[in-house]
Length: 173
Image (cartoon, rainbow, N blue to C red; front, side, top):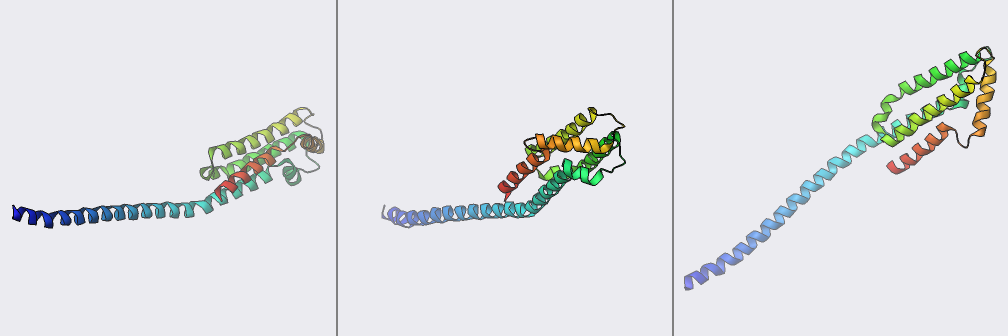
């Protein structure tokens, strides 16, 4: 019986030390794995964030380029008719949009939807104003009507989209 008591005196403390060491090592390994996982996630975020910001920057540039004021300054000439100006404006918007389609990869679905809506609303404004005029009328009349329409709006579609994008950039940074 005394031998059993001696064995227990040695075994019980050894088991306590063993389980304590085992628990500590297990927790240390888990913490190390979690830290490595967090580092990998952080490295991924560091790599993607500049690309996201660049995509948002390009989209804001796109929205600025398809704003009616900017379009009219860039594409309108005095010898254009309403039909020619309308066609040129729509072609320019379509071309700009196609050039920036790949940016949607880095944007939220909501932001991309806002951008598409801004483009669609700009096209609707152009078409609705052009439809109220004769196709062979001077293009300057369409330009004037579009600028008047802009003044009537609370916020130009592209301006509203730019404001939304700025808010989203604020959440990223």
